[in-house]
Amino acid sequence: MPITFRCYRTCTNQSFDCGGGKNMDSTSVGFIGGGRIVRIILTGWEKAGSMPERVIVSDPNPAALAALKERFPAIEVAGDDNARPASADIVVLGLHPPAVGAVLPAIAPALRSEALLVSLAPKWKIAGIAGGLGGRRAIVRMIPNAPATVGSGYNPVAFSDGVTPEQRRQFERVFGTLGEMPEVAEEKLEAYAVLTAMGPTYFWFQWYELLDLARSFGLTDAEAKEGLAAMVEGALRTMKSPDLTPDAVIDLVPVRPIAAGEEAIREIYRTNLTGLYRKLAE
Image (cartoon, rainbow, N blue to C red; front, side, top):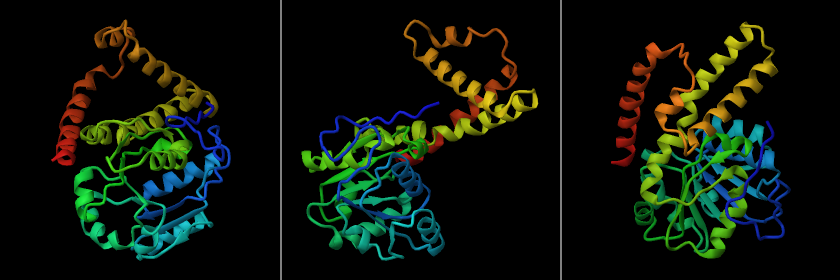
């Protein structure tokens, strides 16, 4: 299926092509943390032809930085020197929540007054981030998800009051090719972390299993993938129909081969995801 690149709000800067063209913006982006989500974002930019002119990444793990440098030779790696990426125009915290607290006061002296800080971590509210930075207010929280790697992300965002209109436009220019970025209430970001950020992991292993079975039943790889993609897209559109209740949707197909296991699956969702959400939201 073709990938559609959608920009958040509008693309008014003439140097930026919303269709995935080259971004000639001279914005520098610094990543503190060089893990999986940074690789996803860099891959999304690369596929869209919108890699920022300068990207600096720090991480205490030399192997992680070496792997990123090999994959994206144009980036700069800073070892565990967080001050280098913290001096960029946009500074991205790509850290797990437990690591954020110690990093904030350490990078505060290196942050430029006009820089925008983007946090990808759940749990850490804007007020807490600002407090850790000594009151800094130009902050964006974003909860990205893995489909951003192919420009089809669903990446909800919340802005602090201190983000200026120009900083918003700058943020949109840089991150817009990764997919949709709806602005939401900050208190809903943890719910989105469970629903959209982690959501693909609830289904991908099942879809790969269906592909394996379909191939074993005689479909080609291309036929299986096309059929699965069309089925998933159609099923979701059916769920969104205002004319159908959940019971009516489920009743559309009379044969449900795994019906005997449905309640066990529901219980896994309720137990595991409710526990996860409470941990993130506390």
